[in-house]
Structures are given as C-alpha cells and as structure tokens.
Amino acid sequence: MKADFNAGRAPRPDAGPFLTHVELTWLEGHIEHWIRFGRDAGETILDRHRRVLSFAPRGVFAFVRWASNDFGTIVSRIDIVRAIDRGEPYQTLPFVRPGGEILLRISGWPKVERVLQAIDAVEALGIDPADAAPDHWRHLHNRLIVGLPSRPYRREQHRAWLLRRRLAP
Image (cartoon, rainbow, N blue to C red; front, side, top):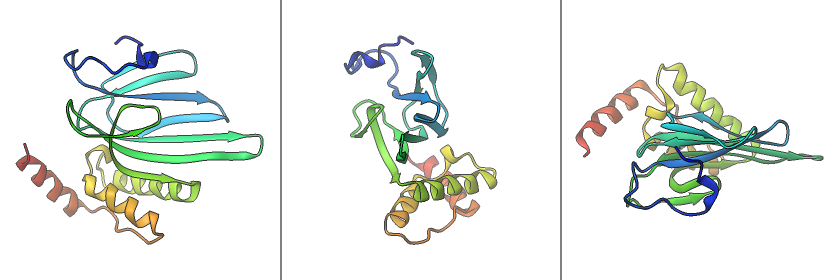
C-alpha cells in the first residue's frame, strides 16, 4: 500500500478496494493513539512514530487517543467506529479517513476507562469485540453520556446479533 495518507486527497472512487485509514501516533508520554480492537486489512509505516492501519468495509474498531502536556492529561478519548463502504454516508473524525459510522464516542478518562472495562467484559465472554452487536456499543455510549449504568453484553444478545446479521444483505 502506498503511503499517500497525508496527501490530503480522497482516493479515486474506482481505485482498488475501499478502505478506512487510521493514522496512529506514538510519542511516549505525550501523544498516544492506538487501536484497542479491530481487524486491520493492512499497515503502512510512515516513520518511527507514525503508522496507518487500514480497515475493510463493515469492520468495527476502537480508536483510543490520549495526549498530555507539562500539566497532565489534555485528551482522553475513545471512538468505536464501523468502517464504511464506497458510497455509504459517514461521520468524520480526526485521524480517520474518510471517516466511519461512529457507534460510540466518549471523552474524559473515567468514562474512557469504563468503555475499556466493557471491552474487557466482552472479551471475557470469548467474543471478539469487533464482532459484538453495534447496538451494544450505541447503548453503552448513550448510557455513559447521561451517567447511567449500562447493561452488560450477553451471549444471548450476541447469538441474536449473529442470526440477524445472516439475514441482512
């Protein structure tokens, strides 16, 4: 894959497979962007501190951003995003091109930590969080935003999601 992520241009509509690109930066203790879960379709290393992960359409991933300065943490954010396919509507977010369907968007370390714990709980069921029902991530987002407890993800909910997904085109 060519490293033209920073060129500022959208890929040609007819050029190869459609991918969602996420730029990750790691400057220890200052700027740390990472993927908590998701199945990437490719990686491009830009330099010692930056790389780009690409995700196929309909892939779900969690993108964590953290930054600090001399006075402490200035950004703590997690986004759970579904990669879009060519022609689908999408929402934009920093470091993700062209964008995606945002299932969850939370900022502030206490809430980010609760999302990370919810991801751990899904994994504890033996389920890859990238395969969990998108409605679970939307539910978690809505409950955290208003400061209410959320329902945990259950195997029955996952089974129902898998069956429903088989019926959709």
